[in-house]
Length: 329
Image (cartoon, rainbow, N blue to C red; front, side):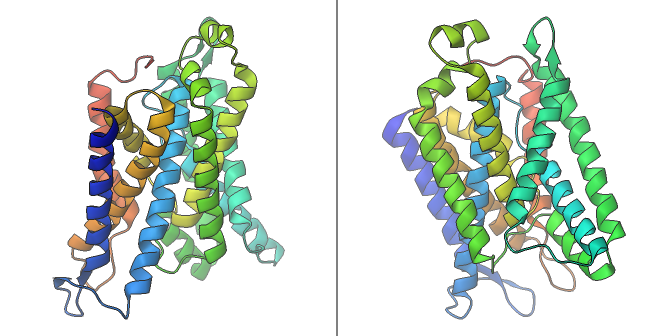
């Protein structure tokens, strides 16, 4: 399936999920209802925008990682980028509290980017074998360990914070789609997603070549050290922006690239924009789906729980199908 039909499927699915999120709500009595309420329309629109930006960022980050590492199981969450960002932000908040200062506005993105980059570099360091370079299975195993360590560090920092800061950080760490996001953070995250998306589309032929062996990629003129550095920085920046906006979210960056590839094929010039739309659609759907689950005493289920419940089985299916083997288009 290629071209117009595939784009119709993607865009219709995205539009349907967005309408579902905009129209679904729960009344004061907890009953599920459908309708347009002008009084809260602005909040719903901002939630959809936040989900679109975060979902697109995670999907593009996963697509770039899968191509560079030739590993279909690579994603920001599996390789520890999301939890690395979470740990960096939590550690920065703890240090700032101990020092008696508050973090400057907008510092979350660079701090989270540093945490994501460190996590990815650690995975690559332990996922390399001398005889054959990057090993897909070793890389995933290293990612699981790095994610576990980063998650434990984030939890430790959370519990060392005072109660007020701890509760807000804990709510963020479970994943949430903000209905009143920080405008500057939303704009920065959107600019990063659009900028990296345009750049990746323009460099699609190089990204395609990176999925070949090292010798073949260099033979067609790709400078692998610089190309890999660019992908590491771009994927880390995307994951960090999404995490700063919505918290660490699992499996969006794993499932969305596969959905885009199944519709558009292996060419990055087609798959990059498709992954952006697929990631946005998946996270908007997850945000709408959590409204369907009633919670005693009010409130809403964290969107990170919905992503994990839906993405976990998808991850196991990919493993069952042998996706841990080296992957080329």
